[in-house]
Length: 231
Image (tube, rainbow, N blue to C red; front, side, top):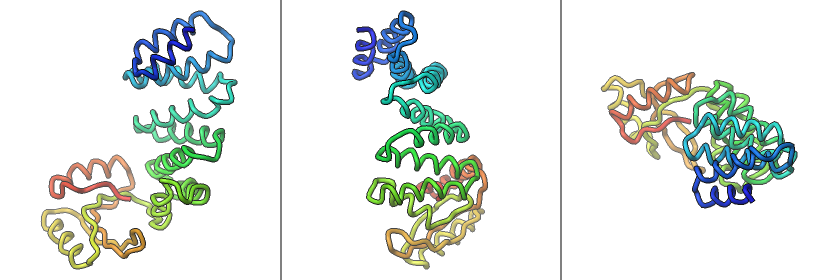
């Protein structure tokens, strides 16, 4: 009953109440399959309540202790998302790998594979990032991540940059790049196919580090507010 009450409170977005019910359950129950389930739900409730450290502890324990076939991959997936949000790309990549190995070859596996690819890029492992992108294109050719994965495969990028604009005419791209160079930015034009059409992308800088690129993005937006990270 405590476990059911905790899950119901979680579904109703009453995260503190869910944690209270599940904590009482875990105080009273030992060595039962339901323990991993309680840890998993409490971990998600704590994450959504902003109790990050407690959430990590619950989810890591759930991932270690589960014998429930319904929980073979979910704790790893949530851990991956939390680590990803906290910019811990190494830990996020490990968690996503664990989730992908254990889960069915069906969505949301494509979502986790895409984030795994992003982790590899942000660690500077550009070649390794190609593997999850290929898996997305092969396994989920009509999935929501297929186009983005295919684009990254075609680009074959090995650095980050700041995208200042995308144009169908080279003249317009050259004009923006020149204007931004006059203001001290290191801009250049890169031809790039997008949705089957030839485009010209105005980029600023070549950054080996994701953090450097993010810092540059903040600076470039002072001149071009619509700038975004590339690739």
